[in-house]
Image (cartoon, rainbow, N blue to C red; front, top):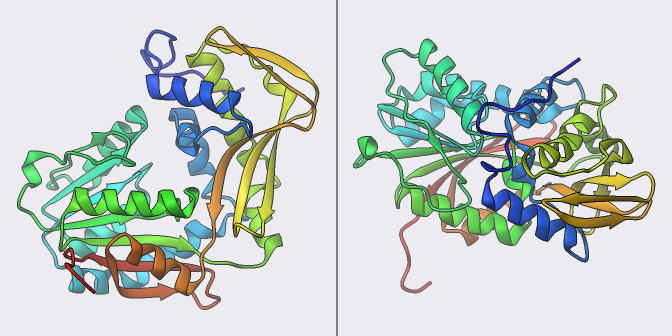
Length: 327
């Protein structure tokens, strides 16, 4: 049996992240209950997501990895070698070694909200690249990040794989891309993965796998609420649901109540009727022009774009353009 524990200091009510508490309480009380997807990624959630990326139904990781392997040398030629590579939401950094070997950077800065998972991943990567200076930064990359002083003055290549940009509604995605531009600076490059529109059945299977790992990942959010926010949520009263929202061009993940249920979080009461849901994640899918418009709106110009033969996934290299006074 898996132990859903937390690292020392991470799981007590006293040490709960105030932003996590605020988002959960506001989200559960909202007219349409929802909790931001970033809170899915505590240590246990990050571990489960790494299992998801290895599932046969989950195509994005396999396709993106193959694109990085095929085109990383070209990325290095365009963006230059010897830069600092800054990875947003680094997770386990499984695709990162391919890029680092091609770019041969002067430094690597992984940024992630899950501190313990970040430090373990950075330590593992340091063993593979013992001469590479690695500066892990624990933080929410949705806000401007102060990069380590050690990379000041270096050219920078941002890395944002996994189509994580799809977790945000377009307005928030543009805001994030603007924050990345501010963090990296004008003239920096960004290598980003974006998932394409495709057959709905393929999408549903990718987010509701036969082995139930994605369901466990989604439900882990309730375990986290119970552990960190003194919650009394009966986890078995909810089930994972993945649905396609055609109007918004996205897969949505929800936690659906399977019966009427009442519980408290941080002492505050909540009640859900059978069939009510908590919206936990979006995964937007983009066409060719959609992805370019998203980047352009945030001040990034597309330099190169690569896709697989079936055009299921795109790897895009963009550059942070200087502000314009007028068109």
